[in-house]
Image (cartoon, rainbow, N blue to C red; front, top):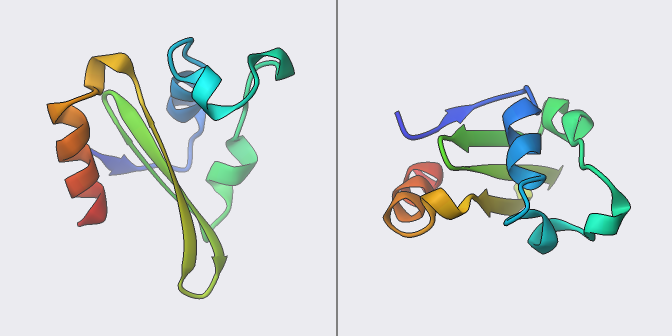
Length: 88
């Protein structure tokens, strides 16, 4: 399985705080990210895989915002397969 839904932020936090990902997510000077509260919200959908994560934020019925974070090791073919699985 390329992805699974999670309500545990540990793997997502590790991905978001990775030195190659963090500058694209938030200012490194702001300290270590912890999105445990976001991940645990029932309306949000968080999907993780070996090299990345999708964080899908629910704003209202049928209104979502998707954030993607992929480690350098997963960029390319793995990321394409992960995106296709996530869209499914």
